[in-house]
Length: 167
Image 1 (cartoon, rainbow, N blue to C red):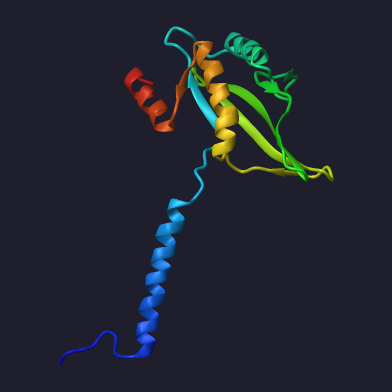
Image 2: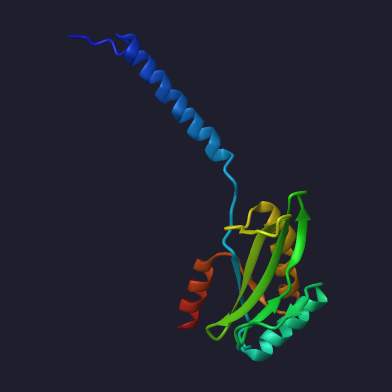
């Protein structure tokens, strides 16, 4: 017995709807925003230990790049004042940085972006979109690379480095 897959109008409508759904998923996946975590890892050179002297050097480097340092609530952390990245009328996009050491040879820069509305309310931005990455992260990467740190693009590279160093 031969079955016709398009035998009823309901089956035809169902197949068309599934086809449009699949097409919509494929098209919107290509338009999805590229996002990044709110931190960036850097490695110190092999002969340098990530310590208070390293943080002091990073603080000086960030100041030279236009960031204003502020006292941190936590010892051993370099913190910056917020910077206005853009103004959109009803809110400003602002960001501040914190730099911490972890392990003997790593530094992590924590990015704290948020929107500050004209009412004074704040809304944290949960990820770094392409615009924030281009305007802030790239600048911080260049600045810290110039001071002798190596950018670690992906955490898996940090983990591989630890394995090859025997840590």
